[in-house]
Image (spheres, rainbow, N blue to C red):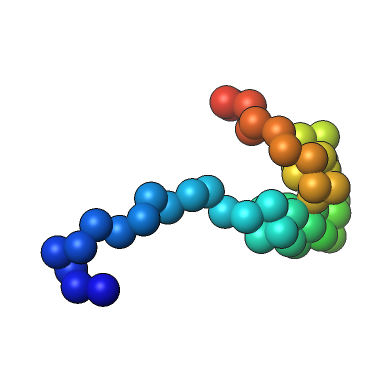
Length: 54
């Protein structure tokens, strides 16, 4: 592929990658004894959710 060719549209991260990242984030929050939001637990469980704006 050359730089002049159109590249395929990039999709969001796969559910497997998002789930793994969420699990790591949960582990860090629990280690620090910080609260873990429910939406983060839902993503780690593989549910497709939209993240709330803070």
